[in-house]
Amino acid sequence: DTGVSQDPRHKITKRGQNVTFRCDPISEHNRLYWYRQTLGQGPEFLTYFQNEAQLEKSRLLSDRFSAERPKGSFSTLEIQRTEQGDSAMYLCASSLALEGSEQYFGPGTRLTVT
Amino acid sequence: KNQVEQSPQSLIILEGKNCTLQCNYTVSPFSNLRWYKQDTGRGPVSLTIMTFSENTKSNGRYTATLDADTKQSSLHITASQLSDSASYICVVSEMDSSYKLIFGSGTRLLVRP
Image (cartoon, each protein chain N blue to C red):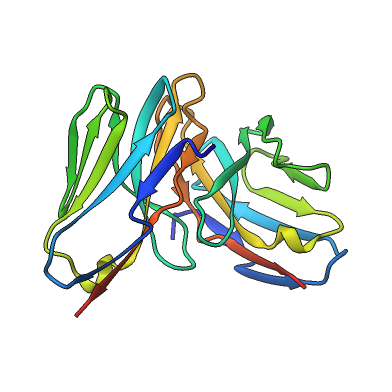
């Protein structure tokens, strides 16, 4: 399977715990994006990388959130001291670094904070 | 204020019937407009992508239209199938940051036998 993969698919955690999600993009894609989607809403942009450089972060990305893409391939999204409001689907997408390139989405990681 | 508004929020149709979903946006200037299909619990999958100069784009039974003057788009589904049951999301990107997709809330479509 050469699509975008995410791990884990589901995560249940208690409030205050830290969680980390992983995204493996399509291998030749040098752009990688993270989105958050709450129930009944469309995804919201969080951040994106071009190769290993994090080029933009949304104001939605509080200081409890950190994303990395150390070698320009896979990426991790960590949430520290989780809150119930963090419960959402976290989607990863990847694309080529060309104007208007298609973004291909992974299946998402559903986070539930109890 | 939501920059991409979709209607209806939800829709139920019988298998074999046609339907049209609407999208209004305020993003300006915009780079392109896309329609995505999202099955429950899955990531969105692209159906069509149109630049501001295009009026229509088809992908099998899906046809998207775009009126850049009125900032409206529609997605027409012909001869619906049970597998069309999903959320359909209108997505717009800005001219200066075309990588940043702005999503609508989607229309939840249920096709019944």
